[in-house]
Every structure is written in C-alpha cells, then in structure tokens.
Image 1 (cartoon, rainbow, N blue to C red):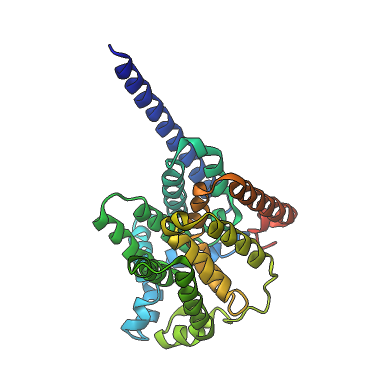
Image 2: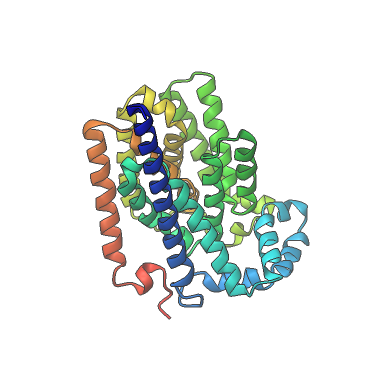
Length: 332
C-alpha cells in the first residue's frame, strides 16, 4: 500500500468520524430543545403552536373565508403539516416533532461545513437569534431549517423546492427570497458592491414605509399582530450589525461578491431598523447565513468580528440569565 493510499484511507476515516460526531451533536441539540423544555404555557408562544396542532383545519378555514390570497399569505404549508401530523400525534407531540426536525437538520448542515471551524459552528447554534427559533418561534425555525437544507443542497432543483416551501411556512421568506433573487440579478449585471448596497437600502426604505399597508392588502395575519413601527428599538443591534457590515465591506471585492446575499441582508436590516421593528424577524430568518459569511474574513477583521459577536452573545445571555427560562419563559 502506497503512502498516498494510506493518506486517503486516513482522510476517509477522519471524515467518517467527524460525520458521526456531527450526527451525535445534532441529535443531542435537537433532543434537548424538543424534550427538555416545557411544552406548556410557561414558554412563550408554546400554547399558540399547540393550538395550531390541535385545530389546523379550523384556522385554515378562517383564512380561506377571507379569500385565496389571504390563504396563500398565511402559511398554508405550515397548516397542512400540522393537519397531517395531528392525525396520528397529540398536539404536544406534533410541536416536539417539528422542533426536533428543525433543530436537528439545521445543526447537521451547519456543523458539517468544515471541521476546522467546529467550535465556531457550535457557537452559531447557541447564538441567541438562532437558538430562539427552535424554542419560541417554532414556525420560523422550521422554515429556516428548510432554507438551510436548500442553501447547502447540491441539486438546483431540490434547492429551489426547499426555498419555495419556506414562505408558505413563514411569511418572512417572501422577503428573503426576493432579496436573494434581487441580489443575484444585481450581481449578474456586474454592478459594484456599493451600487448593490444602495439598491438594497432603497428597497429596505420602501418596505419600511409600506409593509404595514402591504400586509393588510394581502390579508396576512401579521397585519393584526405587529404595529409596524420601531418605537422600542434600543440601537444596540444597529451598532453591532453596522460594525459587522463594515468588516465585511473592508474585506474587499472578492468577499463582497461571494457573500453578496449576506451583505444585502444586513443592509436591508440596517435600512429598516429605525422604521419598522418587524423586519428584525426577517433578518433573523437568514442570520445563520450572515454569521457563516464571517468564515471568509482574514487578519484583524476576523478577530474584530469574533470579539464583537462573542461580546454581544455573552452580554445577551448574562441579561437573560435571571429571566424565566433564559428569556424564553412567560414568567407564569
């Protein structure tokens, strides 16, 4: 056996061991989130999701009575999934199953990216704006998991299949997919990163002003849930992601071209930050992609990014430490 063959076998064995470790970590992550967090009123929004699992057909009829457009923009695939699962599972089991699938699939595709960055990849899964989606915002977490499956899928057909499902599960992905397509068009016509950023900012300002009207026009449930203002924002998120965007911008043209979508998402979020709070939920739908883009940073920019993100995460968890269930609880 030649030395090359030995190295090849060693590489395959190492890859297999890492894949098994990823499988185990993803399983543990999903198991904890789906089975060791209360399935009752003590967790925010949990009762709401149990209601979806209890009577999805009633909720669908309510939307259908407002018309086809209203049904389309009120997550019909999410309701359909709950309907199917509710035929043979209890409402609590339906919610736990969805949480497990979402957390497991997201963790698996993220951790598989590169063994060199395994600690940072685990960190991403514990990032406040990520893990919350598999504990509180369960519908959004499920849509994110499908988006990530599509993002890392090698097959173009399957990628777009997963992408197409996401807005029918969580409406934020109508904007995510539009930004994705918009960014690709701007990049394909060879516009500079500066021009692309300006175009995305103009789009964001338009959405910031008109989203409330748009939600009401299509009969989306969000029209009755959100105030479509930003009166309660602290400014901390704006400073953090502006710094991250600046680091990405300073990395140069090659990085900006490769990570055009991630930079567009940040630019969109910043442009709407002081106009409308609900776009924070849109940003959170793709925050994993934004964080993963940092793997392309070099030199002092990478160190600055890690310092910013780790500091933000520590501060967030410290502030949550004394809250019920680390801020996920209702306090009841």
